[in-house]
Amino acid sequence: MRIKNLTKTIEGQSILKSIDFQLFDNEIVGLVGRNGSGKTSLFRVIASHCLPDNGEILINQKSVHQYPEVKQEIFFIDEKENFLQTYSLNKIAKFYQFAYPRFDQPLFKDLIKQHEFSLNKHYRQLSKGQQGLFQMILAVCSNARYLLLDEPFDGLDIIIKKEMIGLLMEHLSEHSRTALISSHNLLELESLIDRVLLLKNQTIIKDYRLEEMREQAKKLQLVFKTKKVPAVVKTNSKLLDFQGRVVTVIFENFSAELEQAIKYYDPLVYEELPLSLEDLFEANLTSHRKGMKK
Image 1 (cartoon, one colour):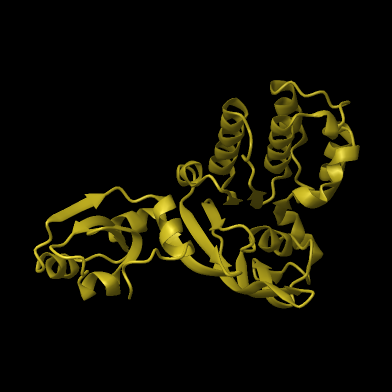
Image 2 (spheres, rainbow, N blue to C red; image 1 turned 90 degrees about the vertical axis):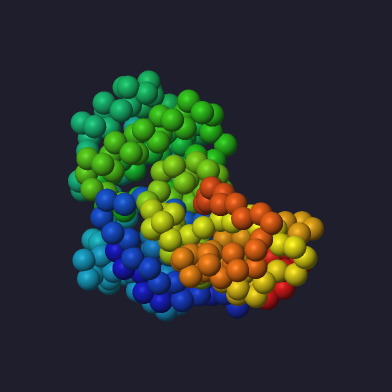
């Protein structure tokens, strides 16, 4: 899937700005951003729940908006516009069988039985965890190539969460599908994804492959002899914390040359710390703390 220069404005307010990225087969991608950054709006536009002002969404070089059949390759349930509430699970299943020609009915029946759902029960009668699990079953059985999952594990207990993650991972590995997942739980997300998109001010500001990032980046805690931080650190790093003379920073493209340049100032403390997705979020999406001005 290719997302090209998507923009969206609602009532004069910019919702998405020049969104541009690709999704490849058999990968799990995280979508991370602060509240109001445009995550759900991006999902809605990709799934054609609303049209962009400009830009394209292409699958196999076909526009989702010009070729309606291409939409069958995208699965998304919008929680704020969720039509499922008033229907029984049986009627919901029939709707998805119609919407997705490759819907796996035998698998659906097996999963419904395995997780002890009653098809006569109405969706609104399910607990939040059961609703989330049922949505994941629909996503897996749709056989759509691209699953857009907006906070799928939010507020769920650990048992339901593990069931959903196991179901998702098994399906993706067996069928070369792709999932784009938004979540506020960065620790949980980091254990699932291959890649992360950082969304800030309604646009994608970073596209990290986590394995490459861990190889290229360094998180360092440094203490220098004075409170003055050397220019080489200010220029090449992103600040995480600054307390007294203790500065914690991320270098996204660390090198032997940078290491040598920092050690030239003979720091009292030079310690490498584990780098997490939460660190990347904090360094890129929050305002820098006062103390280390560029």
